[in-house]
Image (cartoon, rainbow, N blue to C red; front, side, top):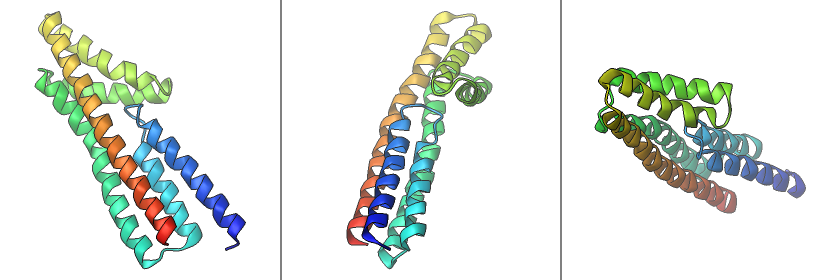
Length: 165
C-alpha cells in the first residue's frame, strides 16, 4: 500500500475512533462499537498481522464488555435508588427512542425523565422518585467514566498496532 494511502487510512480511522470516543458522552450512542468498526476497517485495509490479530481480539473483548457496562451500571444505579425493574426497562426503551427521535440529546432527557415520572406515579412520593432518578444518573456517570477509559485503552491498543504493525 502506498505511503500516502496508508496515511489517509490511519487519519480516517483516527477521526472515527475519536468520534466514537467523544460520542460516549451520549448515553445510548454506540461509541465503542463505532471505534471497533473503524479499527476493523483498518485491519481489513492494511491486513492483519499476528500482532494485529491479537490486539484486535483484545479490542473486541473490551468493546463487548464496555457496551454492556453502560446498561448494567445505569440500571443498577436506578435499582439501588429504588426504581422498579419495569421502570428501568421502560426508561431504557425511552432512552433508545429518544436518541433515535431527537439525536443526540433525546436519550439523555428521556431515560432519566422516565425514571422520575414513572417512579413518582408508582410511589406517589417525589423524594423516592428523585432517589431513583439520582441513582440512574449516578450509574450513568460511572458508566461513562468506565466506557471512556475502555475507549482510551482501545485507541491505545490500535495505536500500538499501527506503530508496531
